[in-house]
Image 1 (cartoon, rainbow, N blue to C red):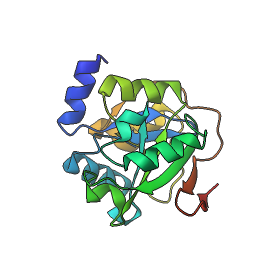
Image 2: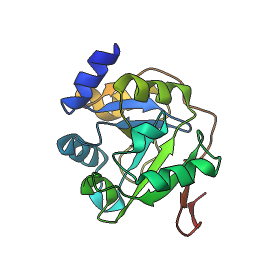
Image 3: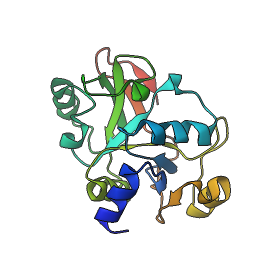
Image 4: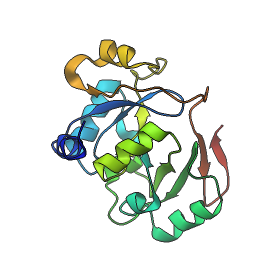
Length: 179
């Protein structure tokens, strides 16, 4: 899809399914509340958990996390890669991304396809596993098509080689929340 077409689709509230490090993810424009709510509905899950955002670079994370925390996470030398950091949310971060907390989970992805999507879209993307809550995540474009039909635009591609979702670490405490 051409970058301007992808950007327009996302800005209008579109939801995409795309390959990530370990599975297919569902994504949308994080600033579009209706699109985020569509993802919660597609998954059959509430907003209390919050969402992960992926980006191609640090600049794409600035509307969501504080600049100092993004730089502190960057200095841990785990990005780009399969590590998601829980950071203090920026004042511009919508509450529908945080699950009601003052933090947001973000990752600069090393998955070439997912990073390319973020670059093409010109923004960070919501990144939550492509599945119904409690079920195993989709691993192929075909599985996504069966699960969600025409409710999402499925991006072809290969998932990475990771067997598990990204590691989730709270920057403030250093506590590993998910291995």
